[in-house]
Length: 80
Image 1 (cartoon, one colour):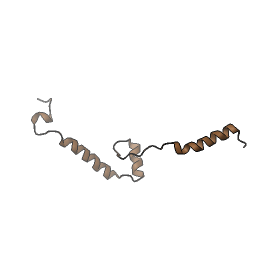
Image 2: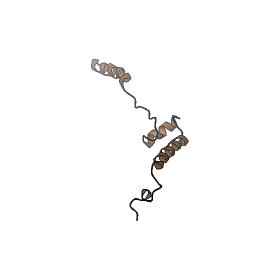
Image 3: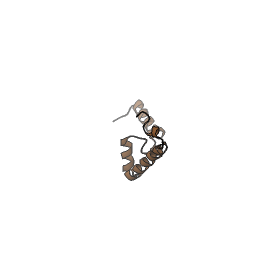
Image 4: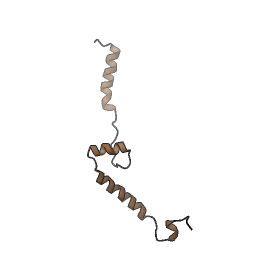
């Protein structure tokens, strides 16, 4: 197949543009992305399910420990 000058330039420009295309950055936090990104990270062995669970429980316990549970109105502010 004989290429025209226009087709050859189009193919060459696509070839030279490949290094300029930015690949999507990998997520450092598996809890910040979607389930597809989480599963892809597990497949790449970036993290394991146990590591993600440990990180999620750590984040949850940090938020729960910040709540003042020692006052009766802190636990249930609208209950009487």
